[in-house]
Length: 344
Image 1 (cartoon, rainbow, N blue to C red):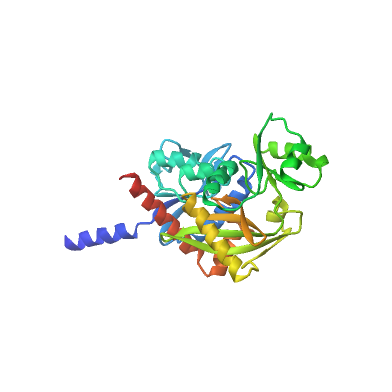
Image 2 (cartoon, rainbow, N blue to C red):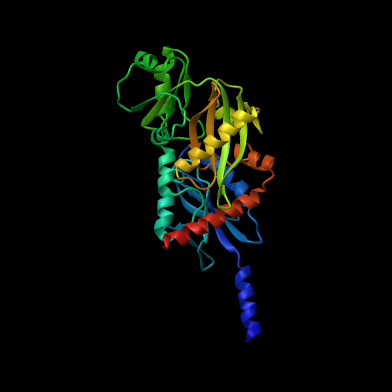
């Protein structure tokens, strides 16, 4: 009897966790998200986890197995295969854009009691909104560009923007990622085109003064319970700025580690960690800065950074000598810890 009890205990200890690697989304960023999901699938430790590829797309929520699709039951995020209902222990969220980066999926998972990776639903909604993020960080004395916020239908002239921000200036959707809908306006004649381009992505836009300097992207995460700056990458765009082509189509150089003086590097690391903590973050993040006049100016924070072969965050992990498998282990443990807190 004692031997049987020990055997059952060992079997329970060896039981692999069912992990939903959730990718896709409803925005133009879904293509990038699908690539990110594949990197996670290839790096999860198969001795600990049984991963499942989960697609959240406009045509449905499905688990993809051997070219077949199995519909997700939205009541509890389970699915049925061969007469067996399969539940997940943790959702690894790699959706870029809505609904996985703006808090919608996080709120849903929390309601049904499913642990998930990354930050909570409030932090996701906050950081997906560029204007609100800048508003929060203004209380923490983190330098940033001057900005003007517009909603579709607002009437403003190009000259009014120039009088406020000067030339050139940046026009960007308030809620969008992957540099979609962003333009640099060098002269007044380009203003209307830039507005239309940004409003095609979102009904609210942000117009910011142009920061001329060195662009640096900083990976920050909660690694094994401690806020950790993973690395600094210098961005050298072949285009006028770090747009979609530069980011994903090879029209940029990404230099890790960034070529900075020790003093500037220290300041950026401290500022990135400060922003991460001020926003109540957890999980992976990538924060972008422009170094101008020796000061790192905050641009934006991405709470579901790209994890494709072209993405910065995995490059930083590799340079730091941290196995991506270990980063995923830490994320899954943090997700489980979050569920414990829900119960208190």
